[in-house]
Length: 121
Image (cartoon, rainbow, N blue to C red):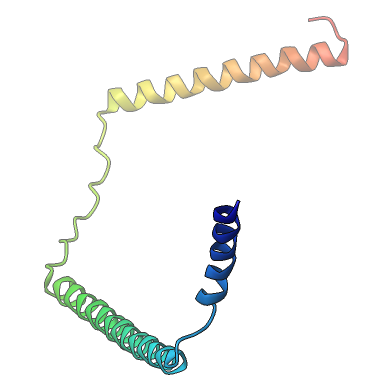
């Protein structure tokens, strides 16, 4: 039983001892804060430097692209070729085919009109 009481006292006392800060704890925290601040300033400076380098590289690549496009030879102008001339026989056949298409269209429309009007054919 004495062992159990001694063990309970030791376990209860351990957290209390751990919560007492050492004598230089405040100085240690101040030093850590300074270290964190310096590291953050270093990281910000590095980020600013990288951003400046990225802007410079973007500018360089844009200038290089513009130079390449300026050196490119323009494409030659090729005029469209006029349609090929037809022989008189081909012209006559095209006219007859167009006339037949017009007659077929008019005939179909006439049948529809007659049906709509109710007239017999």
